[in-house]
Length: 391
Ligand code: SIN
Ligand code: CO
Image (cartoon, rainbow, N blue to C red):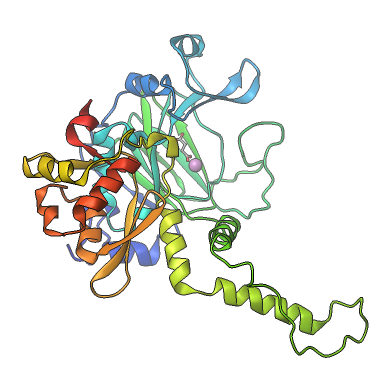
């Protein structure tokens, strides 16, 4: 599909137009983005997920037993839900795309964005009045109304210094003023795109309000610098260090002079400014799984020969839910395949296939390096056999 094709889910904008005018720049309300949308899961199924171990879930109560805007973390139990009032609370469950294949399938509509920018699909349930308060996120998010209705109000872009309410676990804005014409009630299938740092307030208007948040992450400069420095640090030889051969005698031995600062700056810039190294780090960091403990490594190493036989007999491998793949060309024939925070060099078409949604079957055996690579990905937990996945 061309990037100029008008997309109903973007309100008739093409991907190119959306990216040019809205992405990271300004909100977009899309009525009927998903016509006749059927929410892939019901409120009680969401509550069921929130009761499971290892699933990240939060409950926000505007008037909780322990005070206003009380936040509690899952796993919850039936007793939690039984004690809740009839209104003014919200249940939020992260990464529902990892647990519900029909939710993961929604992501097929978002291929106009790099997959490695995706964070997860969070789903919230709220009875009437339920909200998490007016706030800003540092995420791009598509808020898709799944069931029931939610009123969304926007308050424009907010600076990092905007005051937030003290003494609670949420970052609720002290001041929130709804901008003119930025107040809508969303029905199932309607969607609101919000760029980062845009003040928003979504309040449930019905007793069955389910909202899906397709969130996209971008590392902060703080995280990027720290992480890149750690990555480089592991590879730099001890001999690479501040050097001042040939320097002039210091005017004052206690002075940190300009020449010294310039030498240090150059050491740091030269070390950091290596595009090939940076790409290797970037691919690793952007494919790090959201929940590393959800990847289940094999107990015994997979034998490449057995893997080949299984594929030849018609078995298929699948990407584990929550696994992240990306690739980057090294030259015309070779690429680095990034998988769940690791990188491995292989044939470019093999890397592309593994990082796509294509089936992982015997056709892969056309690549001589496939058996060893697939076995390693299997052992790391990034891939699984179809039947293991269904268990
Ligand atoms: C919600 O679904 O209740 C909150 C989503 C958000 O504001 O980010
Ligand atoms: Co938000």
